[in-house]
Length: 169
Image (tube, helix red, strand yellow):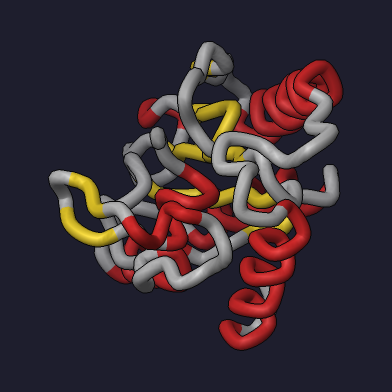
C-alpha cells in the first residue's frame, strides 16, 4: 500500500483529471468493463476464501459501482470482509464488517475482527486486478477538491474524500 502522501496525490490527481462536472463517474467510464472486473474479483475472493460472496452491483447515484462481501462464516475472525469499488481511478477499499466499523485494517486486526491471513488474501485479490487500495483514514478528511461537492454538506456533516469516491451522492 502506498504512503499516505502518495495516496493524497493519487486522490487529488483522480479528482482533477475529471474536472468539476464529474461527480458520479469519470468521463468515458466503461460500466461493462467495471462489471467484468467485479466478476473477476469475486471469483478470486471466492477461491481464496472457499465461499460464495454476496455482490451488489445495482448501485445508483453514487461514486462507486460495487460492494462485495465475504461471508463472516468463511473468515478466520468470524467477521464479514467488505470490498467497495469506486467509479474512479480503479480505487478499492477493504473493510472488516463494513466500511467505517474500524479506523482501518490495522485496528480491525488488533481488535480480532480480521486475521492477517484473511487480510493478505483480500489485499492480494484486489491488487492482482490492478485496483489501487485506498486506506479509509485518507478518505475521512474533509473534501477540498475541484468539484462542487465541497460546497455541500450532508446530514452527516461536511463532504469528505469518502463521499467523493466511495459513497452515495
